[in-house]
Structure formats: C-alpha cells, structure tokens
Image 1 (cartoon, rainbow, N blue to C red):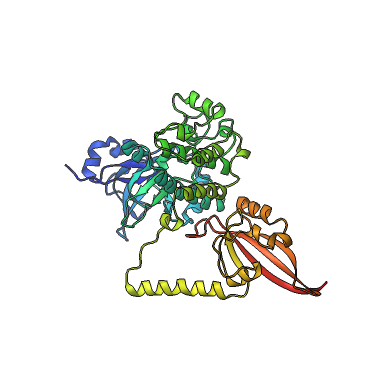
Image 2: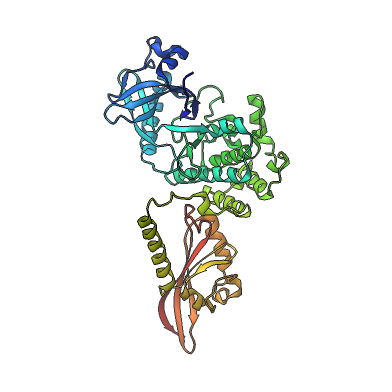
Length: 455
C-alpha cells in the first residue's frame, strides 16, 4: 500500500501523493483534447511542474505542482475553460486574484501566484496545506467540544474580519472551506480557503453562488453577497461545529425554504452535554432572517464570541499561543521587553486604563489610579464607583458604542482642580484589537489634559 497524506486546495481533501496512482484513478489525464488536460511533468505558466491531481472543485481541477526554480510544492487550480471563456469571469478573476494575493493573515490560505498559460488557460497558485477540512473532521469524530468549537470559530471569524477590512467578501463560508492544518506548533491552526474569487452560476442554485446549506435568506431573493451574509454563514458553521449537523437539510428547494422561513434550532437542544445559552444566543443573532438584526460586523460577532469563551474559562493567550522562544537568551530578551513595557505603562504621566464594557477595570497605570482617587490597587475597581461618571455622564453609553461599532470615540471634559483652576481634558475610548493576546474585547481609556481655564 502507498503511504497517504492529506492535502487540500480549494476545500478538497484527498489522500493520494503518488503520481502513478493518480494516473490510474483519474482518466482525465489524457486531456481529451481540451485545455484542462494537464498531466504529470507538464509545465504550467513556464515555472510549475505538475506532479499530480489533488482534486476537483466547482471552478476546475486542483493539481499538486512544484516550482521549477525553487523546488517548493504548491497547489495549483486550473479554471475550467467554459468558465474562463466568459469575459466578465476573467475580469473578475484577475481583479479578485490581485486583491487576494496581497493578503497576509495567519488564518488565510495564501494565494502566491496567478496568470494564464497558453495551453492550459487561467490558473491560480496557493500554499499547499497538510491536514484535513473541518467537514472531514466532523464526519470522522462527530461534534467538537464547545471550547474547540469556539477556538475554531474564533480563527475563522478573525480571517473573515480581516478580509472584510480589505473590502473583500468571502461568499462561501462552510466547513469544507475551513482547514485544520497539521502543524508542529503547540496550538490549533485554522486556515480559511477559497475566498474573494469569482463564483459563476453552475446551475445548482438558479443564479446564486455559494452553498445552499449556508446561504443567507436575502441572497435567495437575489441580494448579493455582503458582510451580513458572511456573518450568517459563520452562525451556521458554529451550529455545525457544536452539533455535527446542519440546521437545514434535504432537497434544495426545502433547504432554501427553511432558510427563509424556519428558525435555526438552538444547538443546546440537540446535544446531550450541557451547553451555555450564550452559544444559542450567538447562533440565533448571527442567523437572524433580517440582516439588520445580525451583528453589525464581524468584530461585534467576535466580541460576543469572546464573552462566551470567557464563560468557558478560555483565555486569549491560550487560544493564540505563540511558539516558545528557542533559547535562554531569547527568553531573557522577551522577559526584558515585557518588563520594559510594563514599566513604561506604570510610569507614564498620562492616565491610562483598560476596562470591559460594563466599566470594570482590568488594568490601570498609576496616573489613572491617582486620577480616580484609588490607592494603587486595581482589584475589583469599577468606574461607576469612581468620580469619573460625574464629569463624564455619558461614559457607559460611550463604552457600549465603542464596543459595538469598534470605532474610537473622543470626548472633552472639564475638571475642577480646586479654587479657580479648571482643566480642559480629552478622554479617548478605543476598542482593543481583536487579535490582542490579553486585552481583546476590552476598551482602552486615555486621558489627555489639554489646557488650564479660568473658571
């Protein structure tokens, strides 16, 4: 028997690495006289040597290739000739491929090259991943534990958040496009596949692109892909991770009807092990029939997900743990940088703090503690118990706004320092980056004295 490894490209999992075996199982290697007939040892794009076929997708065939000069393996997708011959598809392919190839993110399968070969047509080159899709994992082992499901979803959502920030939509988020990468790192690594690319009408969904089991109701009526429809798909994926099934199944027309008319069941009702109701609420909001009732953006979706993860006892550092330093010197250097950052934060004269949306302070520097009238101990500190709400009446409404909209907010307040001295100060609220290892989901508060005024 040949030893097998799992490779993926375009969401396709295969178990073959030997070229001879590929030739035996795939009678399309002869090409049958069309442009898609690449075979082993053919050269594509003047630099990629074909080694085997990885699989087939809606867009075309996916090959394992090796760069002629670098000797590095890649996955190469040849776009079907009947698709590539459409001028609009070709234009969209080049536009989206340029955008996608410029993206760099830990949780995105990289597109490293694209172009047109005179013999084989349009092609796209991606990193070659080893592991299995989430779809295959669920078939193999059943539902994931809530913690693992949250970890997988967090990484997928972060990838979607990133591409949305670059004005790219995915349009086909599903478990077959989520890949569990086999890695030597001491953490789970997820890659999102097949995004931002032209998806032509292949006949299955009467003009809709995407996958019916994950499609948002408004798209069934002809609305285009949107951030809201990607969020809907994230909700369906979370349901699937927690239950190992899809909420709506059956004939195509029945699936589409249920997306439009039926409520996605609460995952907790379908599993035997206890599941926090926060998971049900997250799925319910993300899969609301009306796009306006869903999370306004993926960052808001992640904020709610993080709250669930906190309930499950998951810490941000544990989810996104970096590899440990390789040497004692590197560890000392890292410790030094951490201590230096802490000293700067503690000593700077500008009041600074981080809190959650309710106003519970997680960390504050000495200047902020003095401003709030506290004696050097942050433990249990609530902003509502300080004097800050008296000079900043809209504080808690602003905290909620910043958490929901993920945009900085600046207010001017006036501080009476006694006698006739009044100080005008700017207070800035800013949501912590979602990729932050410790403070993700929290809000930074910085106070800047501007000028002294006469009362």
